[in-house]
Length: 339
Ligand code: SF4
Image 1 (cartoon, rainbow, N blue to C red):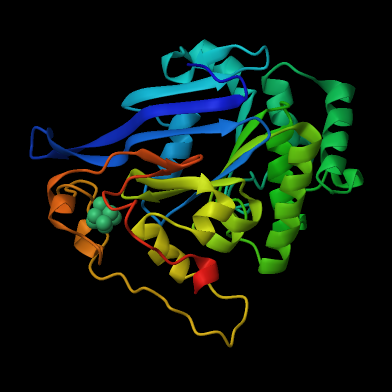
Image 2 (cartoon, helix red, strand yellow; image 1 turned 180 degrees about the horizontal axis):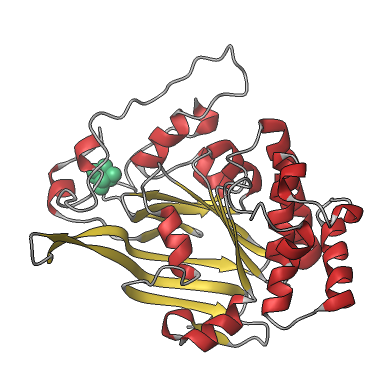
C-alpha cells in the first residue's frame, strides 16, 4: 500500500550481473550485487547506507536512479505532483522527465567536473538540457545556485582547477540542485575531503535539506559520517540489507552481528578508552558464489546450524527496526555506548 509520507519505497530490488565464460560467452553464474532489498525513505529524511566497499551500496543507489538497470523488483517514487511512479517501468522519455526530481552527488569532486568547462557551464548545463533556462536567466539562476551553496557568484567564469576540493564539491552540489530535485543520492559525497571540510559539506547538505525539503540516500563506508547525517541507517553485507533502524537504535542496540562488528571498529570519542574491537575472521563472501543460508555465517561468532541451512528473513523486531538474523531476538549485542 502507498504511504503518502514516503518519497521512495523499494521492494525486492535485485541486480544480478551475469558471469560469462568460454568462447561462446555463456552465462555460467551471476554476481548478486543487490539481492532482494526492501526499504523506504520519507520526505525530508536522510537514510544512511553503510557497509564495506563492494557490498553493493553504490549499485543499489544507481539502480534506483536507473543509471544501472535493476534485474527485478520495484522502486516507487512520489513525483512532485504527488503521484507514485514505478521507476523500473519507465521508458527513456519518462525517465528523462523524472530525473529532474532525482539527482546524484559523486564522491570525487576532482574527476566529476569537466576541467574545460566554466562553473557557469557546469552548473548551467542541466538547466539548458532540460529547457529550464537559457541566456541571462540561466546566468542569474547559476549565480543564485552558487550563493545557495556558499560560493562567490562572481567566480562563475572560472574553471574547476581554480577551486579547492571543498569548493568543487559545492559546485557539484549546485549542479545537482539546478533542476530543483526532491531526492538526492549522495554517493561517498564527502569521502575524498579533509575532515574539517567534510564537516562543512555535511552541514551544508543538512541546511539545504531543511530549506528545500530534500530527501537523501547517503552512501558511505564511514560510520562517523553516517551517524552524523542520518535519520535512519541501513547496513549492507554482500548485496543484502542485514539491518535497518533509526540511527540511535542502530548505534546503541544493534541486532545483527555484522552491525555489531562494524560498530566495534568505530573510533571512540575518548582516545584513552579501551576499544572492544571485534575482529571478523575469514574473507567477505563472494557475491558470485555466496555461502548457503545466512551469507554472514562463515564469519559470525554466534552462528548455529540453522544459519548454514536457511537464509534469515527480513523481519521487524522493533518499531522501524528491521533485521535479517535467525537469532535477532536472543542476542545481546554491543552498541557504541556499551563499548
Ligand atoms: Fe550470525 Fe546466524 Fe544471525 Fe547470520 S543468522 S548473523 S550467522 S546468528
